[in-house]
Length: 98
Image (cartoon, rainbow, N blue to C red):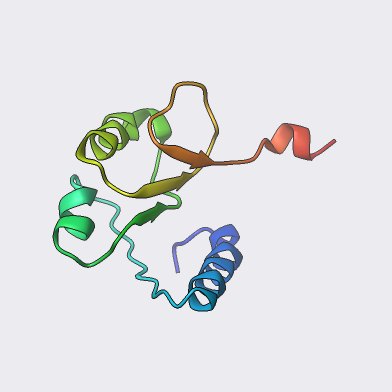
């Protein structure tokens, strides 16, 4: 698998949390998608989106802003930066190493 091994354990935890709350989890590796809203929420495939390993934040910022403007339910794992669009969960690797 080309997925970052770090995400394997994270996906396991997310899957267990979904099951405990009676929810299903759809996992997709859509690296080239340009419209996550249409691919998932508009198509009724998903009620929300968890973005893991979606690529470079600065390259994806416009797509993330579009998700906010469309009212897409999403959360993003990645660097927590001031003024970024949407909800983000992240960690500070430098501080975590101390």
